Image (cartoon, rainbow, N blue to C red; front, side):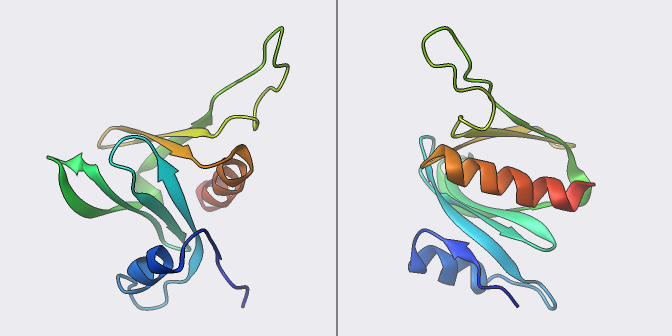
Length: 122
């Protein structure tokens, strides 16, 4: 079994404490902006720990893959940047409950998260 990718041990530990039976952590990434929390990607769901989700209270929110309708990455192409898709550190996830924007600490982490999540959707 592969070891999870993660930014901070305390965030990995927090996600690990919320696992359900047969659930495996694939990655935990620190986020920028909003309530400045983190996102955990498991084999069963996305787990977000953030203050911005529920009335400025710290909350751990689960988003099952079955509720995700689409995932998008921002196109950062342009005359000066020329970077294109996957050069963005931002992902948008559209669910049956609403849309969520996540800003990662680097385009490489956003790209890994995109691939992991998309792998569970198709």
